[in-house]
Image (cartoon, helix red, strand yellow):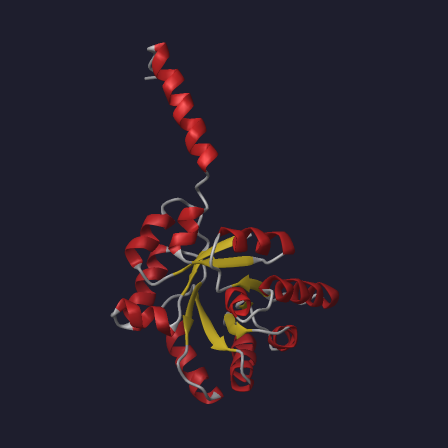
Length: 217
């Protein structure tokens, strides 16, 4: 499973990218607004930090305007992925970019039939929002399962990018049901390293090692 960071904080991205465990980054208008910086500048900096796919989202709502904005974003760096909403116009734009060989991430997916249309439009990634579905009383993982079954049934190459991830349990469940990618906030990525038994075991190992009086170097 690939792990993307969902963030525009370039300092945090640089820190976690140093682990060698980050495969890409996703952004959205809300994260750009929180950064307080010009969008093109932020995306360019992230593209320099992480060589993998970097999703940059259009702000337009009509197909022609999305195509124009997406073309502008694609000029930033070769690893930019154009992020489009899962609307009729968004899928028209997706089809255009697919024909041009430009990678896309179709976002705000909440149903299996939406995901089916995204795959038919040639989306590189589709982003089902599992946490947001959970908020409304649905099981977000059921959506991932259904999309996985549909894509496997028909051999669609669109990758399932689990989004709106709230905790490490979401990461585990998305991996179990077959999501190709998970995009997570930096806080969740940090939590993935942690377990109380790891801390306890390491504490005991260090205590025992100190008692030997030895040094490896």
